[in-house]
Image (cartoon, rainbow, N blue to C red; front, side, top):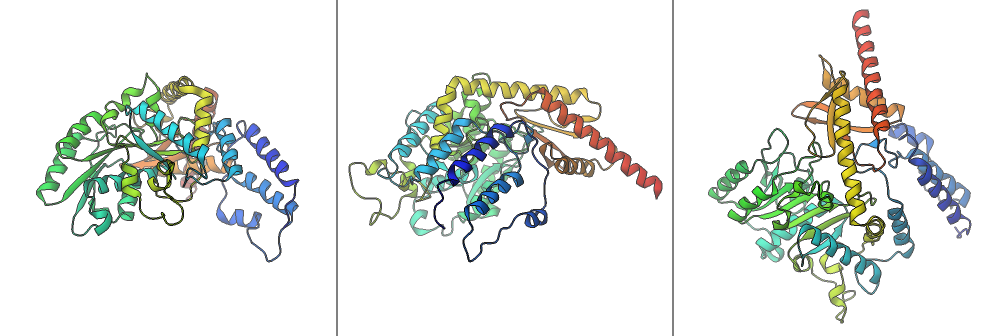
Length: 472
C-alpha cells in the first residue's frame, strides 16, 4: 500500500478530538470478546487495505477501547493523561530511535540520565544509578537480578548451582516478585511471605524471625522487598524498621514504590517513605500519581555502575563500539537492546509542572481521598472496609447475606452501564470495591455519582433477589 499523505492529519485530528472530549465522557460499556469480534474485522487479508478502510479501523479502535482519560476511570492505579506526556509520546514515536546507544539516541539518553539523576536526588542519593523499564513488574525483576548478581557474582557465569536463594516479601506485596523468581530460576517456593498487620503493613518482627529460620536451615536469604503503596489497600511498609533488619542479615533492601513513590515530592506525605534514603533500590512508576502515561517505570539504585556490571555482556562486535562516548551507551545497563525513549514524556510533564506542581497535584489527591472516605461514612448503605493509608479507598455495599456475590454483581452492572470503571478486590475472603483516587480532575461530583449508582444498583439487585425468592 502506498503512503497516503492525507492519513496522518486525519489521525491526529481524531486523536486530538478524543483527548479533548474523553475527559468529560463516560468510560464506555464493557464488551465481551465475542461482541468485539462481531463488530471489528481483525483479519489480515492477502490484498492491502485502502486508507479509508484503515481510517475506519482506527476510529472503531477508539470507540471500542475503554475511556481511561475520564475521572470516572478508577479501576487501575492510573487515570488521565497529561497533555505534555502525550506530546512526548508523539515526539518519541516520530523520531523512532533506540536507547541502545548514545549515537542513535543522544537526546533520549541525556533526557533519561538527567531525569534519573533528579529522581535519585529526591530519594536521597547523590550518586545513584537507574534505568527505565517496561513496567513496574520488570523494574522489580531488575532489582532481584541486580541483588542476586551483587550478592552472588559467580551465578552470572556459572548459574545458580545448589544455592537455595531466599527472598522475602509481604503477604500483600505485588505478584511480580513471584513472576520474577520464576523467570530468574529462584523458584516460587523460595519466595517467603511475611505477615502484615491489620492495615496491610509488613510486620518487621516476623521478617526477622523468618530470616533467622532461613539461615538455620542452610538457605541463602539475600533480598527483602518493602512495598510503598500496596495494590489493594495502598499501605506503606515501615522502611526504616525493615532497613535495620536488612542490615543485620545482610539483605538487599528494595522498595516497590511503583504506586507510592511519587509521594517523595510531597512534604506533607513524604513521611510514608521514612528511611528511603537507606535502601538499596527502588521501583517508581510516574504514570500513576503524576499522570505521565503508560509506560513510565523506573528502576533506581544508590549503587552507581551496578546495572552495567550486572547486565552487560556481548554486543561489542557490532553495536557497542569503543569510543569516547561509549560510557554513555545505556544498552549495556538495560535488559533490552531496542528500547523506546519513554523518558521524554516524563521529562516534558515534569518540566511543565515542576516539583511544586506535582506536589500540589499529589496533595490534592490525598485531600480528595479523605473526602471520599467521609462520603462513604455518610451513606448507611455503604461500609468502609479499611482506614485508608493513602489513595486506595476500600468499601462495599452492605448486605446481611452473600455480600461478596452482591458486590461483584453491582460492579458487573456498573460496567454494563458504562458510566464508571471501578475494580473490586478480595482480601481475607471479603470482596469489596477498590476505589483509586488518582485522576487530577476527580472531584466530589464524580464521587457522588459513583456512590449513588452503586447504591441504586445494590438496592435493585436486592429487590430482584427477594422477588425471585418469593416467587419460588
